[in-house]
Structures are given as C-alpha cells and as structure tokens.
Image 1: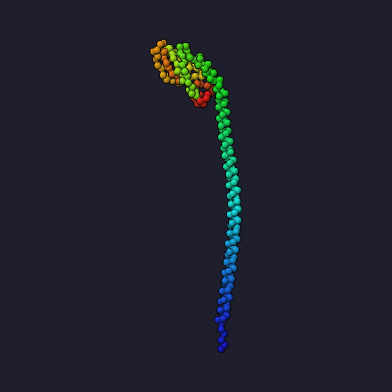
Image 2: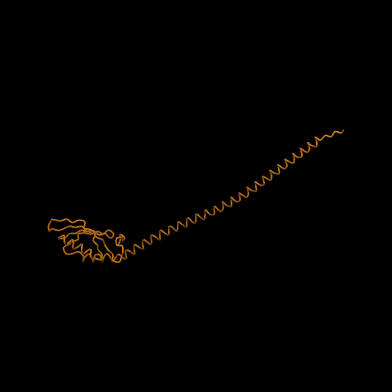
Length: 191
C-alpha cells in the first residue's frame, strides 16, 4: 500500500487559512480604522459647524443685549422727560392758583383775626394767628369751609394770651382746593 502523507497538505491548508485570517483581520482593522476616521471627521465637522453657529448666536445675543440696554435707557429718558413735562404743566396750571388762593384768603379772614404765619406742604396749609374771641375763629373756619379754594381740616390749638390785650392764639389746619380737579387730596406737593 502506498503511503500518502496528508499532514503537509493539512499544514499548508492551516497556514493558508491562518494567513487569510490575519489578512482578513488586518483588512477589518483597516476598515474599522477608516470607518472610525470617517465618523470622527464627520462628527468633528458637525461639532465645528455647531460651534460656528453658537458663536454667531452669541454675538447676535450680545448685540441684542446692547440694543435692549439702549432701549431701556431710552425708555428711562422718556419717562424722565414725561415726568418733567407733567411737572412743568402742573406748575403752569398751578401758577395762577396761588394768586387766587391768596385773593380768597383775603376775603375769608374776618375782622378781628391776625394771621401771624402760615406754612404750606403740598395742599396742606397751617395757619397760626391771633383772634380777639373764639367766635371770630369759628367765623374764620365757617368762611373757609364756604370758600371755593380753602377747606378746614382741624383746629389744632387754641390758647389764651394774657399779655396786653386779651387774645386767642390758634393753629388751624386746612387744605387748598383746586376747583375742577376731582381728587384734591391726591394732588402733587408742588401744586
């Protein structure tokens, strides 16, 4: 019988398969590297594009913030101008009111009363004076209540003075009224 040695053939086949395996493994590694490189490149380009977009949006947002600050500044200036205009308008309207109030005060103060001082805070008036008698003070208060531009709030203090001629020293609080305005109690201090 003839002896055939199949070991060499099997060894060669095994070596050939091993060689094919390593070649396939090498090609797969190259393919995986190329896929990784391709994915990495695509993702890097997308990240770079997104970063460019983000930078653009940030610069636009900064510009919008500056514009908003300018708008807020302009709105504050506008409000200040409106307040100034209202104040000037109020002063223009109240200018003749002081003269009218003094004119009315002359007609309201009865004979026998001397006003020594008066103070004005907004629409609140405080009169200090001397009267010959208590009925004169009452008459002064009645006339003030009947007046168009003055309104009595309260009689704060009445003291009798015994030096020289007997007199009643009084402190009377009142409000200045402006005809035609609905809320006289809510007028600004400059009127």
